[in-house]
Amino acid sequence: MDNFTPEQYERFEAYRRHALPKQAVRKVIQQSLGQQVSQPVAQIIAGFSKVFVGEMVEKARAVQIRRGETGPLAPDHLREAYRLYQQETGRVGAARPLRSKRLFLR
Image (cartoon, rainbow, N blue to C red; front, side):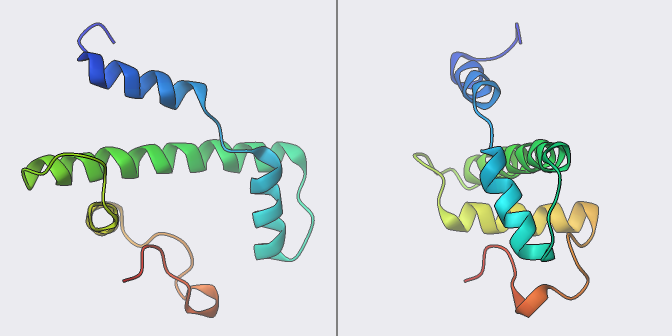
């Protein structure tokens, strides 16, 4: 953290302070799975989700910088970040998404 630029440090502090609402995460899980999940399970999934969102924002920022663009992130930056993430880690989620839902559709 000592080597962060002021902008990076501000972004890190915002990331550290915020959390995904556990009840909202629990509701999404229950709607997706069609069954109840315990609070600890929802909390774990919320933590993993926060890490995933952080990685997507980092990659999207890198895409934005590589293109020489400034300002807020655009949906196209996130789509490209997700494409790069899939390339690096393999397919995310179910092999066949439920009801053909995919992230960051055009």
